[in-house]
Length: 168
Image (cartoon, rainbow, N blue to C red; front, top):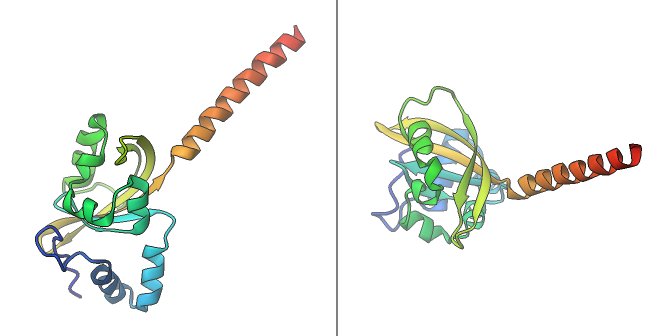
C-alpha cells in the first residue's frame, strides 16, 4: 500500500484531510466515514510531520494551538510551537530517526497563537515512508488538568494547615 504523504507546503492539493483519510482507509481497510470520524471528531489533536513539518492536522489540533489549518501547514515546523527549553528534547526524541520505543509519551509545553503557554500530553511514533521520517502524533491539552491538580494541592495544604491549627 502506498502511504506517501505529499508535503503540503509545496503543493496546494496535498496534505488535505481527504488525502490522509484515503491513506488511512487503505491501511485500515475501513470505510472513509469511520476513519474520518476517528480523526476529524477526535477529542485529541492528531498530526503528521514529515521532515519536522506539519503535513496533516485535525480540527482539534488547530483548536488546541489556536491556529487555522492552513496557518499550521504553512508555518509548519513543529519546533515553532514548542517552548524554547523543550525544543532540543523534541529534536532529539521526535525528529531524529530511530525512536527507541514504539510510542513515546511526554508532557510538554507548547505556545498557542495568543502566546499562552499550555501543558500538553503528547504521544508520538515514527515511520519510515519512502526513505523519509514521518512522525504521527497525538496531543491532548492538559492545562486544565494541571491547573485542577495544582488547585487540589493548594486546597490540601490549606486543609492540612487548618487541621493542624484545630488539633493544637
